[in-house]
Length: 55
Image (tube, rainbow, N blue to C red; front, side, top):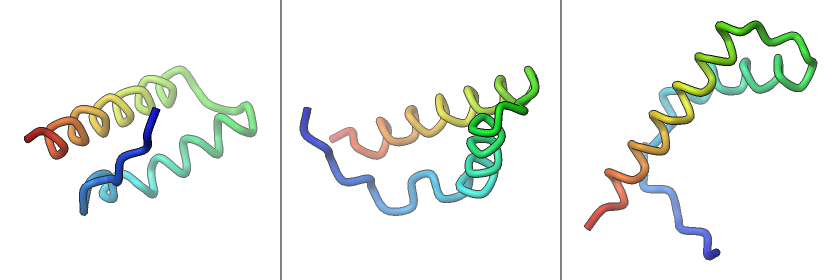
């Protein structure tokens, strides 16, 4: 699998909240609500990336 460059501006609006959520996962203190929020953020970013990368 070849890495593709991320289109400019994709994902940066979620950067801080993702870092907080991922650090809570790493420490093992994430709540179920935070797990749902993390999943929603990642799904949104994937969809945004796919839209930005589409021809």
